[in-house]
Image (cartoon, rainbow, N blue to C red; front, side):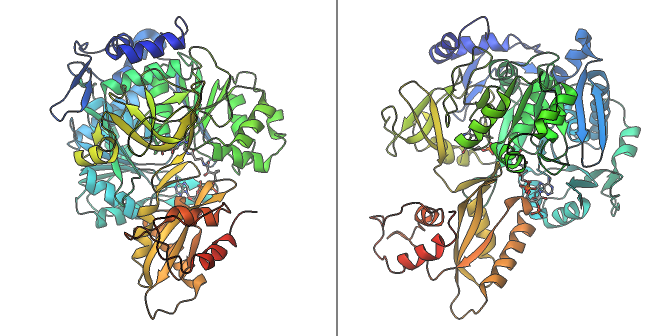
Length: 632
Ligand code: COA
Ligand code: AMP
């Protein structure tokens, strides 16, 4: 176990005898029925952890703490600069609120295995909703509140959910965004019909209740009896979380109950060195995996106090807000995306605003979601003098694949590296033929099977997408979709995606999905979306479109229309920059669009004509058109 044992010991043990290692970690949980089978392969050939165990994740995250005498400890600190409100909720009170919400869901017919959509802003009811589902053994599908109605409709259809929980609005800095019209549009578009839409009314904007489907949250909860936690099988799904794939259709990553709880408790200690009573703040959103793992489940399972922050790193009201929250609540661990710190650095380059706050209880900064660029790493080191930990993970893994293992012993870090693989993950860098490459050589970062507990158990309703997308290319390995290298000292460097996914302000987006939206415009014959470097957001998407023959439309007009389409169909969070009209898109002989060469052109990088291309006509013209946009 961390602290009493070394990283090297546990890493080796988890490689050599994963069952013994994870059985030991699982023994730390108060199971309903302790598992006797640690690892097995299911009928579909996929690995399953703790298959004959049963538990309730919500009970472990709440009731267990109350029973252990921690009922009065604060479970959630809600801090909302956008609504000028603050709330502290104890474990006892949270247990009560979750039980009532679970009772409400039960009264609406929700039972074990049923899916519930949660489309909520960053308010305590979002956490209550997730835990209430877990309490009943129902499966929550949280959809980030910034997604447009169409994206919500796609998820309603895929999850086939009968109940949707929402709030009347979100607040973006100083703008109130009414959710109900978006939800109504999504419910109208979805072919699967939602039976009950429960709305939490916020004073900033009251939602009109339009049909018999609509229910008021507080009224319905008030009528419900509290519900007790239901034991579920370790392998039963806890949640589905949709993430971008290479196609237009998002993938529903499925997480189980047992492996997830074990991984959360282990990672809270091994990665974050956080335990009972510590104030832990993941400055993200419950709609993303970081929010699931480290706003909700990880800290609560570990008995920490978690911070739920409804605001931005800047403009709510200024670039000192992260430091204000850390000082006010005695945050020990702060976790956010590099983009958030780039935004803060831009507004407050000398970190003057931080100096107004007592940050003596802040011990470490964690970053993930995208590559931590060395200048941001250096800025944080220089101004805060704290360990700055870059750690690498994905929606699919649910917890860090590589990190500086703070719960064992902090290692010296290297800028640009996520340090070492965490125990349980065996990394291999493979070339495109699946052969391992030497230290220092870049390739496909792959994880030897079995994946440790807590990683995805499949793609909802699409086992073939799990196999094709992750397992087929390199037999015996999970293909992460990231390219990178491991150096002579075992440090892992993650360099970027090997597929058409881009990271925009720490949000993972599919360029394929954006291309589908652009392609729906009547003027567009074909198109490509590429990621353009951006100082704050890392990348922002740019569309390159070829017009249909005979179509006359001015570029600014088309660009504005396409921006409107992306905002309507995907959401403003895509930060779609606009579109350029080009004569043609470079393609391989087999007709595959060469996005990479266009990315290099637009980002001012060296490019050369690939051997897979016959027809180089127009490439120079395209290069000069794109390089005009390149950052200086
Ligand atoms: N609901 C509705 N709209 C939302 C939204 C939400 N939950 N989240 C974002 N949006 C909208 C914004 O209002 C903005 O709309 P606009 O173009 O009309 O102004 C657009 O989506 C882009 O938002 P955002 O990416 O947040 O840009 P920003 O300029 O407001 O803020 C950052 C920039 C860097 C401060 C912000 O992106 C940030 O904090 N990122 C961190 C992300 C993160 O935590 N990721 C999780 C991984 S750890
Ligand atoms: P998401 O599933 O949204 O969490 O995004 C996962 C992807 O973000 C990974 O596959 C990486 O491409 C990228 N990513 C996350 N963390 C890091 C990191 N520390 N360094 C580099 N890339 C990262």
